[in-house]
Structures are given as C-alpha cells and as structure tokens.
Amino acid sequence: MKKISLVLVVCLMAALLGACGGTAETTDPSVSDSAESSDSTPEESTVPTAPKVISPTSKVIDFSLDTPEGFTASVVQDSFTFLISPNAPVDTSSITVETTPRDESVLTRTAEEFEAMVTGNAASEESHGTDAPAGHQQFSLSEMQNVDLDGWPALMCKYDLSFTGFSSHILRYEVVANNANYVFTFTDTTDERLWQDAFARSAETIHLILDSEGIALDYSNLTLYDLGIGLSIYAEEGLLPQKAEGFSACIGSRDVIILVTADNKQENYLTELDALGYADLLRQNNELDEFQTNLYGNLYTHFYTTDEVGNSYYNMICIAETEADFLVLQFACLRENQPAYAKQFPLWASSITQNT
Image (tube, rainbow, N blue to C red):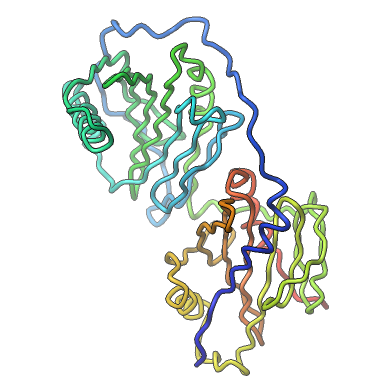
C-alpha cells in the first residue's frame, strides 16, 4: 500500500487568493441607548422546567449564529472558536464558543460561585499573559438568570471585568445540551460598549444543530462545473480552470480554490480500504486532525497554511469515493474569509457527482 501524501500548493493559493487580502475598514457598531447598570442585584438562578424534547439518540453536533458584520474567525478548532473584531488589534472585542463536558450543575450556580470562577480564570490569564501580578481584577455582575436558549436550558450572565488597565463588558451563555455544554462568550472591550446591541442580537440567533435534523441540499443558487475528469461539482459562480501539478483537477478564483485528487483504488493498492480507512491513512501521513462527519454527510477535517509572505489560508479536506477512486476534495480561501466559506464548502463538497 502506498504512502498517501497531501500536496499543499501554497504558491497557487498565493497567486490566486493573495490579491484578495486587505485591511478591513473600521466598523462603527451602533451604540446602545441605555447602558446596563452594574449596580443592579443579580437575579437568583432557577432551573428551567421545560427542557428541549428530542430523540434519545440525537445529539448536538454543531452550532450556528449570526455574527456582527466584520467579525472574522481567528481560531477554529473542533471544541473552540474565536472570532475577532473588525477593528482589531485596536479593538480587542471578541466572540468565543467553547464546547465542554456536559455539566448540569452550571444551572444552579450561585452568584458567588460564578464570580469565583470568573475572577479565578482572569487571574490565571493575567499572571500568565502579562508581567503584572494577578489578583487585582474588579468584577461586577449585573444580571444572572436561567433562560431557554434555542430550546435548551442555559445560564445567562452579564458582567463587567477589569484588571491591569483592561476593562470589558461580557455577555455569556452556558447552554446545557444533551451531550455537552456550549459556552458562548461575547466580550466588548470598547470604552463606549459599542458592541452591546450587536452582541445581544447575535445571541438571539444561536442555534444548536442536531445530527437528526438533516440538511436540505439546495444548489439552485450555485453554478455546476465540469471538472474534466468525469466529475462535476456545484460551487459559487466565477470559478475558472487552473493548472495545479499533482492534482487531477483544479478550479478557482481570487476568492477560493477547489483542488481534486482522484486516487485510483486498484492502481494504488487501496481496494482493502473504505472511506474511513482512507481518511485515517491520509490523516496519519499528513499529521491532520481527526476526520469527522458533518451535517452534509461529508467526511472532513480542516487546517491552516501560510505562504512565504505571511498570508494565512483556511483549508477544508473532504473525502468522497466512486467505485474506482477515492476523491480528496480540498477547498481553500484566505483565512480572513473563513466565516463566509466555512459553511459553504461542505455544501459544495456534497454535490460532487460522476458525469453520466
């Protein structure tokens, strides 16, 4: 059995996508008409009485939310997502989503317990991230209550935190799903608390996606491309054929690249493998993260690459197969464009078909 290697054509990405880079314009979010009072008494927590009714075998496998305009993903991992303000690094406001082990006890957490958790975490981050000593943070909890978020019980907290000259207003939801906790943290570090309204609107759109929901495969707004190797794929309009040594097919534009490798099972001694086995071999040989299955049924993983001038690219790899070949579909875009394409790539990958 041959060693499967993944060819990363960073130079091609730089040639096609590099021209898309640029400095984001400063975004001025609307200012809240009435600021939250930090002196109000936190409400007592109560456990919700109407949890979401779902199939016992269903589980949450992903989330979605509408983010304020201009926020881009800085880190996307399987259990942690970090999005930064369009005005970074001047404005360090952010949105984070973290998946943690399921823990119902957060729903009955007291204000004192929550303060101890927050200030303890802040002290640890401060002592490890700066030269200043920890323990000088100021904490003010303005609201704390149990809520229903997308049908799931959650603890919602609004609080202000400052330490070592750093101040932030934070909106935090910890959602208890049936298989894990999802922690959504909206941190506004502007002096005028410019993001408060936008963050509140974003939180209202949070949706935890179940594996039983299924996805409607709608390609009506996409363009069908013949890849020239007996395969076709739907993607956004404006893509053109590109030359990419080591790949069976390539189409792209200044915004996105799609690379396809058809790995013949018979010629390359891969007949004993199924798609999962092939993906695992690809992962081991290229030190990739574990492959997972998304809502579209794609077997996928993702990673970042950087070219010689420092441009960073978001890559998604999907595995498909025909009777004769394993197919490696590689989608790439500039990292700053990841929020726009991370949800599009799986839909495109699901459309790969053999020509008749």
